[in-house]
Image 1 (cartoon, rainbow, N blue to C red):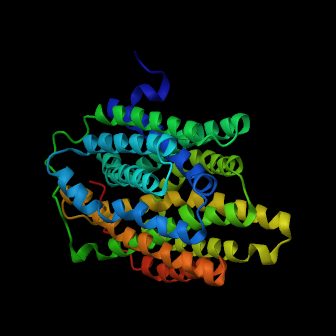
Image 2: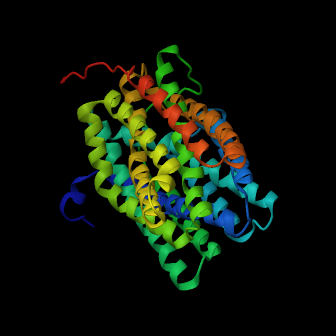
Image 3: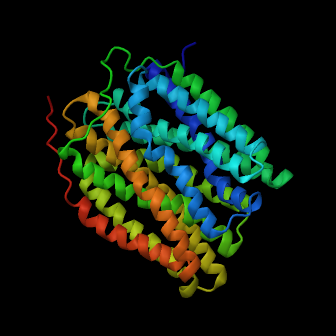
Length: 396
């Protein structure tokens, strides 16, 4: 069947990749919108316990360089992506129906997290396979927009179900599991990269040192946004799961338009300016989380935090600038995926250890110090990103 309009002009692989990304976005959106409320409502975690949980949750990311090295030795990126979605499906079903104690919670969190981290290794290279030279940011931005369409669908389902049935986490994670399964089927059908030589199993080069440093900085951003950014709303202000879902829905809706636009901005302004600006904006967001309650009366403080959450969620899309930067400096295309996997391992050295320190800071001195620490790291990151240099792109 011929597709109408512009959809009929894009390749089969790009359509499949868009479909897979959309379903992956639905599963991921459900997790991000519900996880903190799930941990609070079902397992009654404290801030310290929440910080410690980040260690096993992020452990697959730390080990991803070894996992991806094994997988890349006999599987193409598209098959690895399909495997990642199967693991995500299993993790979701386990959390929804089996994880009734701490041991089972940790086990299924790790399974889900393993799938989540594997897909982040290969999704960028898959998109870059079908990107034109000089348009890498645009292509990854388009895929980011598709992911946000999926997030809207997933989070919309959470919001609707929460309004009708209350916080039914079993239903939430059933939907997430089915979405991940459909994403896996789409990834499995891809033919991208079948004719290219296998990626190298392990790459570590001094030339890529700045990419590794930027990856570590991304670990700070991720830790603040995914763990303690939402934890402030849930624990300090009692925000319910339906409201968190609505915030994530708004951020995803904005992302449908803004992610492709941010991809174009990366192509136009370059990774140096974009990533440096991102660090300054992260500093502003951290200060907002820390001092909104002191600077604004109660109703407005919460509204300001809502805005900070949405703004940070949209800016999260700028992570693709790491991938486009690496693509421009890479010595050999076969080094792209294993180098990305090493970058993910490095960012998880931060995102595994910093939450433990952050949980202790929260317990001993208050939540403000968590965000002041993150803000200080973001300020340092601004100067790190100013060191980025990329070769000129010829028009040949």
